[in-house]
Amino acid sequence: MEFTRFELDNGLRVIHHQDPHSQTVILNILYNVGARDEEADKTGFAHLFEHLMFGGSVNIPQYDKVVEEAGGSNNAYTSNDITNYHISVPLENAETAFWLESDRMLQLDFSQESLDVQRGVVVEEFKQRCHNAPFGMLWHHVRGLAYKVHPYRWPTIGLVTEHIERARLEDVEAFYYRFYHPNNAILCVTGALSLEETKALSEKWFGSIDRKGERNANRYPDEPIQTESRSLATEDLLPQDAVLMAFRTPAYAELDWPVAGLLADICGGSETSPLHVELVKEQGLFASAEAFHMKGLSEGLWMIYGILNDGRTHEEGEAALRGILDRCSTDIPSEERLVRCRNMATTRLLFEETNPMNRAQKLCYYENIGLLEHSGKEAALLDAVNTSQLTQWASEFLSPEKSNVIYYSPRA
Image 1 (cartoon, one colour):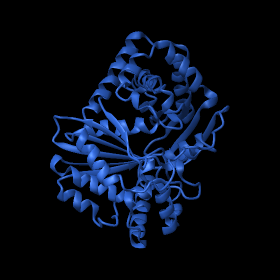
Image 2 (tube, helix red, strand yellow):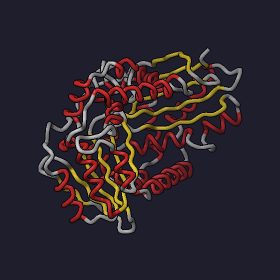
Image 3 (cartoon, helix red, strand yellow):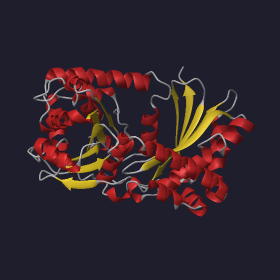
Image 4 (spheres, helix red, strand yellow):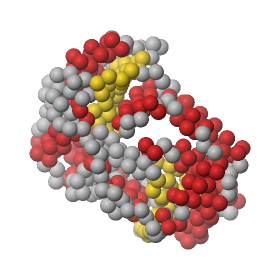
């Protein structure tokens, strides 16, 4: 991807990526703040703040109404690492998008009423997603088992609803002024807007916003190296027993995610994988099973699970999953298998990049971790993976003493 990067005097980093075939303009703003930046007794704040950002700013009391009138659409998401906002508008209304996003960065309209409304929305979302959905408490269980020190030990939605229910207006304002300012944000503009227009509009609408604070240093307590297997037996809202195993993996910036992702695809990412062929089709141990890798800026998580068929035990399921992992560490996969999985991963990557929103978010993401030059080079990183790397990586990171095992049973 071709792009141009520049920085305003107040610290806002701007990336321009022109698409002459598009008649829309996308503004993607990444704020360098996520759930890992919360306090242990005030979890869920980053996600709560995502909701508050749509509650109105000083000059724009009804954000969504203005977006709709401009013929646009918008959304946002929060993760453990970042909070991301994006808006798409027709080319002729590009300046409206700059005005909207800059006003939210300039000054939100804090009020007790807005906080009460959004707090209620988030609490209800917590109840629906965590208490009333299959595997709703999954990330509470996985993160609480895998992490004891690092703030990755709670999920994005928060540890308990009480943390959100107790949120005070002064707490929310402090969070905003600490993290929501130009020096801690990255703006990517994609679409038909020229570089000259992008520079002019960025300076006009964002340039006068005060720097407010320092850029998030992203310093967190070091999680000790895991040296023994951990386990948990629990109940959740699901129809059958299940076994899940999770392993901590290196940070995204270390760029070994292609190895981790390809290994997950080889082990259990398709219906031709050993996990599915042997344990689902042939042995009938699991009704379904999968392996996947979740990237993270501090650390990632490599996971494998199986939903047990009736009459099969958790112990059988764990032993079978460990058998698959043992082979990952000792049996070098065939070159044919690696090429097949690499082609699948590359195809997914290419399809993602046909979407200008994905390109904008990717450019912001790489800039945030100081690796902007690597954007658009993922396919080359995948091509560089060889079979011996897969077994070496599995041996180092998927060893039994680094496993976090959860036995799930249906909630009574």
